[in-house]
Length: 404
Image 1 (cartoon, rainbow, N blue to C red):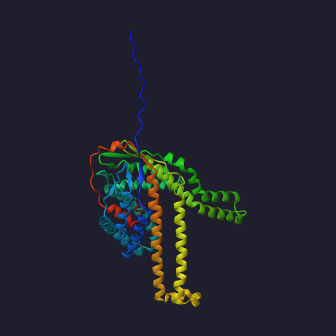
Image 2 (image 1 turned 180 degrees about the vertical axis):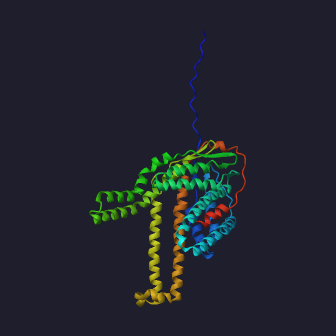
Image 3 (image 1 turned 120 degrees about the vertical axis):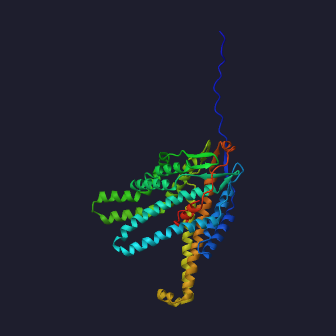
């Protein structure tokens, strides 16, 4: 009998991995948003479209994968045109609603409900179309990303999942995010490479259920105090509730910062393009400091604004008349102009702080935490897909729901 040699099965080769790198200069970005915020005020907000384009171009171009950074090809003029088209759609709706409420004043409160529902659906439609626009303006290694699918189908799904999340006090939010992301990603493409999303709502909930309990703790505490006291010792129960609510407010930056870190890590790790996968190791506490810094800067800005108002009113009205400051300020043109300038300064300062910490710094930390596996699967991708118009981005801008 001849023996047949036995060969053990070879172990699978480890997947190749590439770390994402972010090389953007913080000072350069700060100057970008500072100058852009000032130009927004000078142009009555219309420069926002060019500023959004410059911000994305900065973030895209300094985020490299295997030595190659994506290119953002969008233009501010496209966003402006999309915004004008959006206003042409929304303005008649606003006017019609105004006329209806004048003619039927008693039904005004009821008329607000369908208007709110309509704009919510419109906002979700805008979010989907805005993402479609941004993808088609993103090119990596000469191949464009693109997106198909129906914005209205997405909006209906978002409305249903949002209703369920509200009914469950946010417990269904992880499943909502997973379902909506699956719909978006299966319509995303990199050339002829199809996208998908494998993140599960149960995994998201498992990572963040403690934060969810902390988020709804005032509601739970109120119910428990109401059941335990049953009308007795109401002042004591009210005092306990107020104290717990104050503590909860101070804990909000930790709760929300932890939630966003978990969401970023879960979202990045669920993205797929064919065999190309992503993984994030973003720590749970990676964003705590950023939210506290924004809060600190907001407090300092408001304190500075208060001091500025006192000095301005004192200069134009007189420090001896501060007791009658309200009456005297109304008749002082100089004090009014100084107040308007102060408000504009607040807007500039807050926008710069928000964009620096919650846009640039969050992007930098999330991108740097990402590892890409099996990138070679995207080496021989054929170009495909058409450019999308900027209508969705314009709608998102007019409804203030635009994102990255």
